[in-house]
Image (cartoon, rainbow, N blue to C red; front, side, top):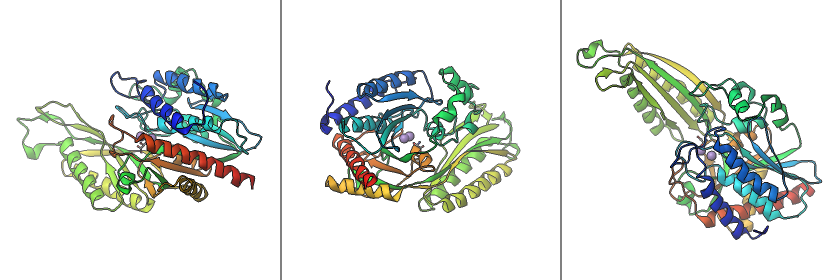
Length: 411
Ligand code: HGY
Ligand code: MN
Ligand code: MN
């Protein structure tokens, strides 16, 4: 294989790599790759091979981010990338597409001199599956991951344990942090929704990333005999939680721009003839305006308390994370719009309902996202798909973005 600046060829390689990397999983038969699971090493090996071939200097930082640098005489760095972890039974493109397009960008640049370095970032953890809190990878670069080190996974292993078990050391966290010289961060990612397909657009420029809260709720009633416990004597935790789920859906359906989801519901003891005594469930609530999200959240938690109290049930609420809505950098957005114009492509603007590493990186440097159309609007699902020509369009725009940024930096 020779290095090429043929974007059609590079695009084909990126798509083939997405499909190949999707087979690297911790659950045979599906694509599931949670934080620092063993197959992370295989993904690192695959990406490092491309990076080495391109002559990039590659390191693995303290939280397992794979970081490959294309140096420059310029003092600043443009960070380009996305995440390599996945949700359970994921598709092939969420995260990985943006990582691979970053390497393709570097290959397409060839030996062209740039007034800034490029650092390709393959973030080790964005989804928040293993520890319930997302962005371990990007938060290492912004210096906000230390408070996560004590979080425990379902097996009781802490983030710090996982780091050490992978052969890394939390002592190296300071070296992972970006402490200066950042020109900004740009991420290409599938839209994961219906907007671009409806607009007939291959790509879109993200204006902001919705803010979100993730909360755990534990309803505690009393397990009892399903046959002998009169309805008036029950403390049915699942009945209380079920009313909560309906209230969540009702409020989100009746609040423009609000999305709210109870994604996990575990009833115990979980037998057909026992009134459920305990329910563990989760709430994910998002809105592009923080005020709307922060208005809805307490109202829903009050609903949960009321549904519980009506049944002699208690509910314990455990906040897991909150991310404010993050506007994308106006200058970078303009460059993406111009780059799309250069390619003669539509480039509608849209808000991201999904969280992304760009919302973390955007707290310390200019950040921007280019979305690629999701033709079937599916994501966090094995049928997640892209149109090859849309991905090539994104690569062309990413290259034009870098060229325009180089002119701007030099000016
Ligand atoms: O859940 C999300 O918003 C993203 O897919 N991490
Ligand atoms: Mn995702
Ligand atoms: Mn993602």
